[in-house]
Image (cartoon, rainbow, N blue to C red; front, side):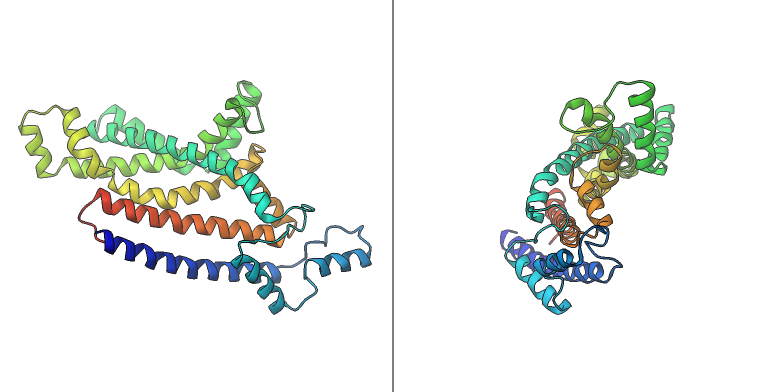
Length: 308
């Protein structure tokens, strides 16, 4: 298991490098071919100053040369300077803002996992009961409502109608409640429905009937025998969900004025800040493939039948 796991990880890391190279190349050329430039909105700039700025950032060089310069910096771990944030590099902006987005994502995903697994388990154990129908109805609503719409509703209700929480900002506990709830809602609903279906399937297995025949209580049957096997599909879902939480936080950060990486990404896209957009895309892509690798490894430990 140890040797095969090492080989598997090395092989996946090699593919990860290839995927990231393709993404970096695609994002570079897509941004360069997009209409407009990083200094087009600054109409007050004299032509000579704009020419100097383009020379400073190598934008006056042929596209192939720009690509080589960018990839050379990328290999060294340098994502380049920001065109809009003067005297700040993309590395610095990401280092300052990504921890905020990461904190929001961790809290939201943890809440979604705990509540979703619990709700799905209770719904499955109490199949066809009022609790089951109520839980599934709420989860259907959670999946159907776009999280930006839910965020606006929560903002209206609990910041203006009932001023219980601040409307914007980040750092204090009160400022974190609504963004976390908004971001966690659709993932909680999906995990709950997935957990219910998985738990119902596990509870119908012969070994569960054997455990019940031995006189174990329903709580012991579920906690000792059913939960471990039923939670396996949830683990598979957590990899893409983790990346989706981080990318989904982009809209949430704008709604609640959170100074995270998502806010910088939106502003960079609007301002044609090429390097910041490419750096953010590359970071999110890296996290996606990394989370998927982590889930595959965790899956092999949870289910011994899985061979990597």
